[in-house]
Length: 176
Image (tube, rainbow, N blue to C red; front, top):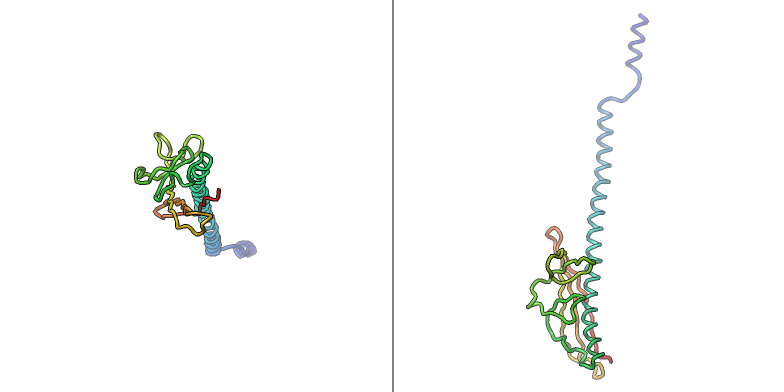
């Protein structure tokens, strides 16, 4: 009789049942699913932010390319807007002038071996970014400033079928 009691008391000790263990695994799985989804979302936002920052820099570079042409015109004694007529253009830091978009339909930028973004060239890695520079001569707002140039630099790109764009603009005056 005593042996039977020992066996019964062994099985009646407190412990976890299979249902309790499955419930705990389910709760832990739900928590992990939330953490993993948060990590994935964070990676996607980081990628979007990286592309927006690069687009902002490329757009600013487009504006600076036009400023360089304006300043070179001043240094050479020409009209500040020489070579800067109304239209849509492409250019990169290697160019000394703007190329009309109509004669360069590929506005995609390529990454060269030094890490610079340039226009199409043989054997370069294409990027997701395209840049166009728009110039428009506006009517004079004041006699002493003349006719300003409205310059816009538009960088566009596409990621997983979603289009993005970043546009920057400025007015350039002949304040010399």
